[in-house]
Image 1: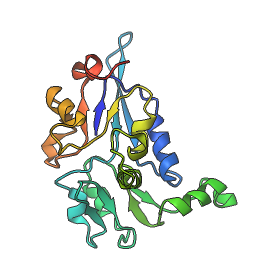
Image 2: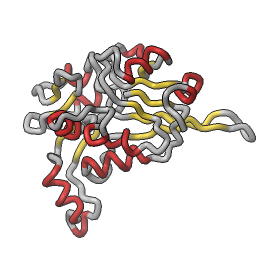
Image 3: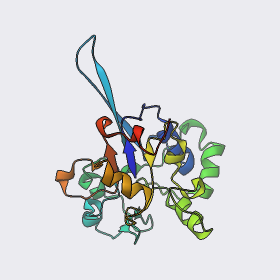
Image 4: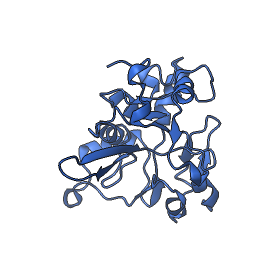
Length: 221
């Protein structure tokens, strides 16, 4: 995934789309938009950095998991097997990006129990109280789309919900292993960079600073 920070307006559409797609519990957000204000009045400005899971190639959360609950697929997506997770939170401590969230099983309205929305979501997406959760790049959408001959990053049905929901087209998704793919060309041509490369995690999420936006490239307003 590439995120164009020039285009991001912190509308939180990605965060809402993620919760709606994955039916996450109260207080659990697999996607956040970090905000910072800098400068002084009257020229103060704000910057925004969307933060999904980075799906690192050198995966610290996987290395510390004592049960093997965290695993990485052949396509690079990092997932959690909830049947093996014991809720030790080692992965939460190891992740330098704060991508892990703990599901404590709380309902949005504890005094009345689960809402109809929560009950329905529980039949579609697996959530196990007492386990650590994270962004999956909407792997269920990718898998179902590929099975039907669709291409992730091209066909919306096979693309993460946050990418589809972004109103400014600030997100590009695709196959980084394909040197001819659109996302690979953008990473190369615009020198996109991962967040905090000094951690050595080799993330699969890249960022375009405002100075290197694809505003004049193949994406058009």
